[in-house]
Image (cartoon, rainbow, N blue to C red; front, side, top):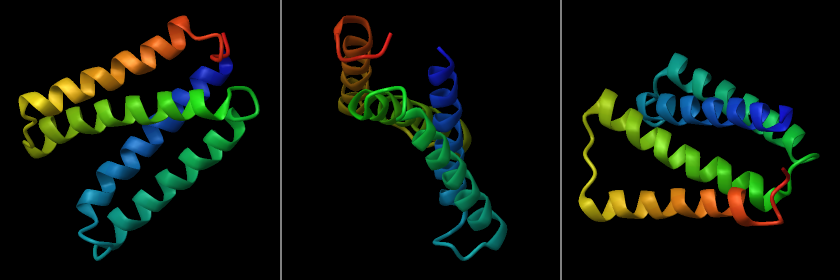
Length: 110
């Protein structure tokens, strides 16, 4: 279970890095750029620790699925970016895939 807590922290760090990346304006704003790089460094360090306990494919599926959902929600709330129906369906399918892996697959570390 500790691995999933670390994975959650890695996802939060990656989402924060991605959010700051938008505000870095192509790495032209120093503090947003440095914040983004720091968040990514933490995220990848945590991911490297997690991969000792969770299979790479499973960890990355959770990482990417949760990241897509969280970045989309933050972009909607903070930046007013909208998603159309096909984008929402696609995100829902990604979530369904991650849930299927975690609930039904014997590949997932439980």
